[in-house]
Length: 78
Image (cartoon, rainbow, N blue to C red; front, side, top):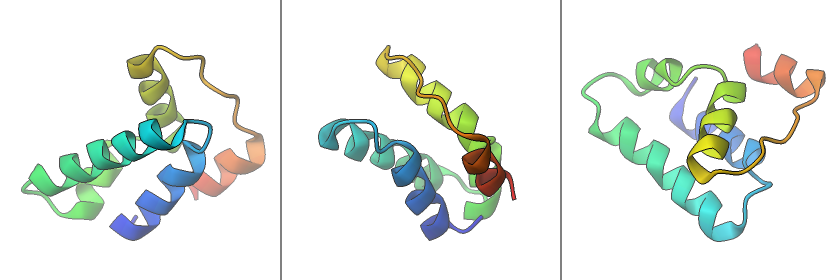
C-alpha cells in the first residue's frame, strides 16, 4: 500500500477519535514510516491489517475498539 493511501485509510478508520487524538495517531505512523530505512510499502505492510492498527491505537489510548463492518474489512484486506 502506498503511503498516501495508507494515511487516507488510517484517517477513515480512526475517525471515531477526536481531532487532536486523530492527528497524533497519524503523526505517530508517519514518523514510524519516516524513521525506517525500509521502503514505505514494506513498513506499512509490517503494521499488519487495519483492524490490528485500530485495536493497537485503542489499546494505547485505553478506549474501547469500535466494531468494523465486514464490508470495511473486505476493503482493507484487498
